[in-house]
Image 1: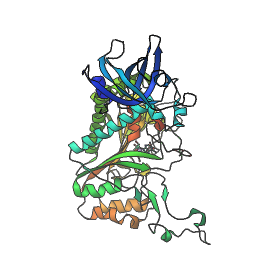
Image 2: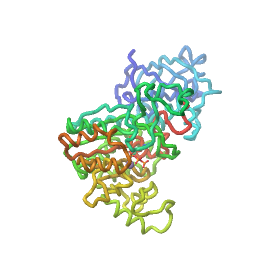
Image 3: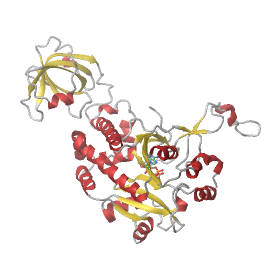
Length: 463
Ligand code: ATP
Ligand code: MN
């Protein structure tokens, strides 16, 4: 018989029909009355389905009684209305078979609650827990929501490269990509001859698809990338990964305001999608992880983001006399503690900070008329801080060339990027949304290592 998904059966009213499910035993309870209750999960939903196996089944003593948490099973049975509390339907088992055993003496996921730290050491088994199953389903739903958002607005999905030859995108330290034998890399002069390497020049993993997205935006109008990005930042924080996923829209004929409008619309739209389409998983996080999670998200969807300039933000922050580790001063970057203070204490809402000093932002951001600030924008959320960074791009050839030189970069490395300003330049803008930061926010999970299947962080590559 065709295998049915538990998510579907729990919604079904097809009582009396014969069904087959396959999944893993979450718990088993043997009743004195001559039957066992099995809670089965197949990953299609956070909910389990209850199976009743009676002792009249031929393999009851030899097999069913020996089932333990973690065993995989196949169940044939009849879908019935449940007389018990807590569930609407259950399966009266007619044929319950063990597929794979899980020795209860060694299986690491017993009924007791495990710490997130411990679960990270068993990343191959943690998706079988409620939390990590829910994270995986929410990541999937949010991915769908993001593609839908852009597709409905006729953005073209662009596959930007993962290996890049420009080692100066300015967004962070890069991982090298090489086929050279690292042992014998340097010649007598202590230099590496990259002509011998695979690409004949130094290559790295990308830190952003932005520059390539600009190329396509200036031909196709509106594009977006959604792929893995890599930063070799040696920072062990709860919101940085060495490999993370980023969504990067880039729009021709769009200024900073249009850019912020799109960012706000995107964040609200995908948050609303999660609330509507991931009810069970969101309900779980609301109960066990993030206090008032759903109410907070609801608030964000229905109110507008605060927009203020960096200069205004500094004015507000410099009135705070205690509690900050990092100094607040015009010209210095806004730290995550400041970002959170603005969102959580001052405005109690998402905040968009714009027009940062040009010294603390990359060369490609459009310089304002004041000559001191650039058309940058960061979207800040409560708890996670910065979730989006973006800007209007410098579209004037001479200004861009000067900025490249000012930052001690080599214009020759950017010849194609400069060309875009030489031939048919237009006002254009874009931003990068950190997908894992978004998932952190939606789930309320405080550590970014718990919202990606296999986290890559300094000194951690066990899976
Ligand atoms: P931060 O200051 O928080 O380290 P950033 O300013 O270096 O971030 P951007 O270059 O603006 O980051 O990247 C765009 C978005 O990508 C950020 O707003 C954030 O959501 C996400 N992001 C950046 N670096 C990381 C990382 N190491 N791990 C996970 N997400 C990241
Ligand atoms: Mn940023």
